[in-house]
Image (cartoon, rainbow, N blue to C red; front, side, top):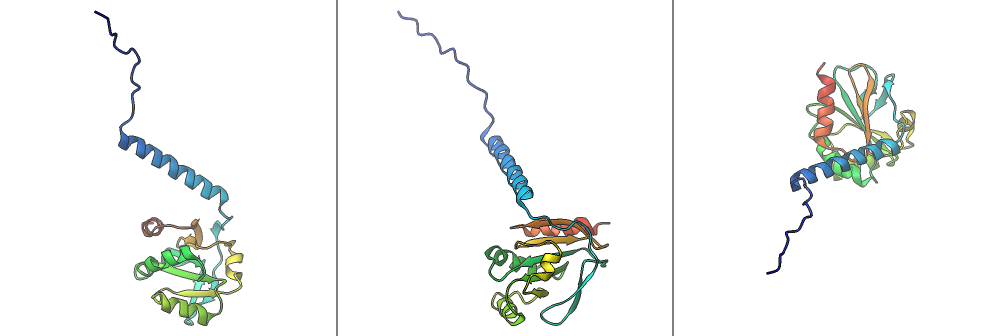
Amino acid sequence: MADNPEPTTERKRRLPRWARWTLEGLVFIAILLAVQAWMGPDLPEGQIPGMAVETIEGEELTLGGPSDEPTVVVFWATWCPYCDLELPWLTDMVEDHRVITVAMQSGDAATVRAHMRENDLEALPVVNDPEARIASSLGVSVTPTFLFFDRTGRVAYSTTGLTSPWGVRLRLWWLGRG
């Protein structure tokens, strides 16, 4: 009778599948945020003096400077596919938050107005910036770019690229809690 010894190699202790996926997801998000921060443009920080602007509908607004509530200013373009994904959910935020959008290098006011009408975005206040003068004065060179102003007119947060409605709402809530 031959002895068949049991295998002596120990099984490595493994994390459960859900724990591995969670850990891998967190590492992926951390790497993504690090790359975004490293490659992102130099956006303004701190106090921004109020800049008087006019919407395509003729309404006078102020970008930066003191305000009664936190403000998100979104730089976008008619030719930007990511902007087409984000602008529709921004229309839902206009009633509850101060949202200002800036159409960057998107043609004349009639072209921007037509784009807004075609995409059912007419609830958004839009400042036209055909030569990107406003954008460049704030250091914005990519779309979409979000600048979050606190009540004093200080840029508290900024982000470029895709973001989420809950991320925007959370930042505005955080700025408005004080």
